[in-house]
Image (tube, rainbow, N blue to C red; front, side, top):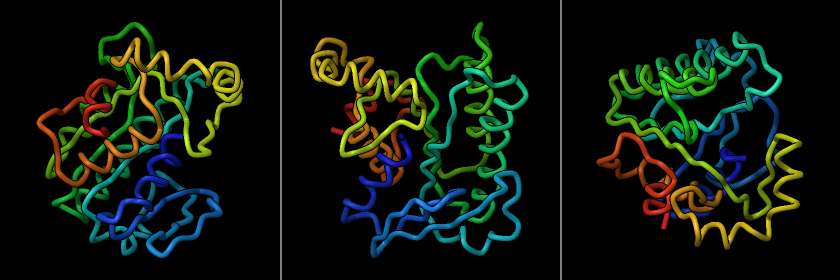
Length: 209
């Protein structure tokens, strides 16, 4: 959901020259500045490294719900996938900025497994020699512009509660954002950087305004 929202905003932004989407399945999208790289192994980019050069920013939006997943599998998808991509990209593009989407509640010392894994991933990515790195921690995200969650239970929730998001956004701006604002914030920080290493929902809303 987050990746799709970011992609839509990138394609609409005249300041973005080209977008490379690294995906396992075709997105079905076509655009003059859109390049799609179908790649199955997110732990090995050795065969496609020549496709990953000359980019200024990585908007890393891959993520899954920990519900129903083993600790080992969740760590692989969250930590291992991100680190392999990060290590590869920063070696190929030393001036790249990293914008990594985690989530509200991320905490290396948290009580919940997912929060600790995300926190470890943030710390490990930030230790790589990027031009700059920024961790995005959105809480509630309202999907707009046809964006849909990949999690069935979330789609049901959005269908039932979608009407309430504008009110919630006004009442709780610290905890609510939209896929449009998040996408624009990722672009802005990916392009210009930020004084903040960690952006919570209120900072995302400011950056994406």
